[in-house]
Amino acid sequence: MSTVQTLIENRIATIKINRPNQLNALSSQVLIDLKKAFKAVEISAEVGVIIITGAGDKAFIAGADIKEMSTLTSEEAMAYAINGQNLTSYIENFSKPVIAAINGFALGGGCEFAMACHIRYASETARLGQPEVGLGLIAGFGGTQRLPRLVGKGRALEILLSGSMVSAEDAKGMGLVNAIFPQESLMEACTKLASKILRNGPIAIRETIYAVNEGLDLSLEEGLKQEAQRFGTIFDSKDQTEGTTAFVEKRPAKFTGK
Image (cartoon, rainbow, N blue to C red):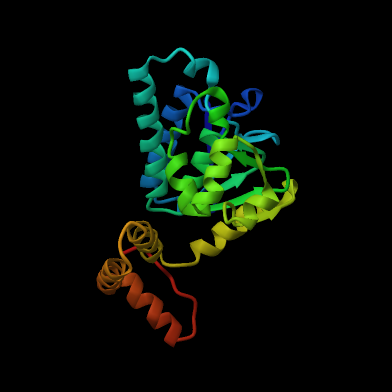
């Protein structure tokens, strides 16, 4: 049985890590299968938005496979970290919106994968954290870099150095998750958001993701320049013509992604 399952319905791809008995821990095979799943939906014309979640009702991703990781040499550990970083960066810069449906524990690598997603919805039972220091380790899939960017240096260091879990409510308060829902309503809420996004122009969605991600590493002045450049380039698209014409004609736009 595959460690990752993909279901496509109404242009929404749900990618599910399928190791419920291991709380969906990230083994090397999971990383391989996740990359394959994202590559497949990236090129699929049948997919416009992705939701990533974990099997069962206990965990989104409870972290790395510690048993597997404990046998690594220094060189192997560095390669393992780079592999995980490459995958989280790939998700962060994905051309289609990625929504994390955090349905339980999102710890260590699980929290890092959630942070790489564009939007994070959590269940009331979700718990997030970076407990690596309790194992004598540090976060290795981007946790020391994305967490401060999301919640600020002080809060990030509190989480990273204490190894404590953060409740869904506290995570929402610090901006680590966007919204909280009852466990039974989480996927419905993610699907509603995905459907709302799908009504918009796919080129505009893609360029918005790129503009935000690129701009975060630039000064405001440079970020505004690249925004203006992308804004201008979009006027070469048929979608822009369709969107503005539909607005003037007071009808729904029919975007084609061209």
